[in-house]
Image (cartoon, rainbow over all chains, first blue to last red; front, top):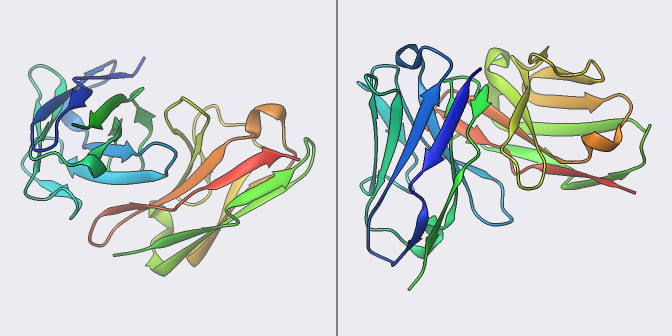
Length: 116
Length: 109
């Protein structure tokens, strides 16, 4: 069955970096676009960015452009989110999800807390 | 950017009642690219509907989606206890390519 498992969340100080991973299994990872979506505590869903099936194209929300990088390693069935220059407003649960037009499978999420 | 506005913010209903949730777009959305998700507390969102009206695998037929252009609707014909949750609409297309609505909470009256 399809599984997406995020890891790498935690508490980090403003201005520091964090790298999230999303380990995929149960499907041919290299044929699917993948996305990151975040949800601040008690808030709605905010799209973070998407990468194409081969990683050649990525698009990100304006709120994270220049600070976050999305990449993937298809040989290891893993999606990454490199987050630099973190701000308090980046505090959220970060989900990885499969798909481009519709997100048909989601991970359980990993919590990132940016606080001094 | 295509902005999705969901209404109402909260819907208070009793089990067995019909729920009608609205998702309005700031500009026309390709119906093939409009989806609905359900999220329960502490859980990840779950895809319910894609292509505006196609139920995802395993979704009960009491859930239905409709609409086109800028107006889309998610209907739950008869609410079951497990349906009380938050529902989000999502569109693909334009720049940025993905946006979500703010959500509608369906709560027990």
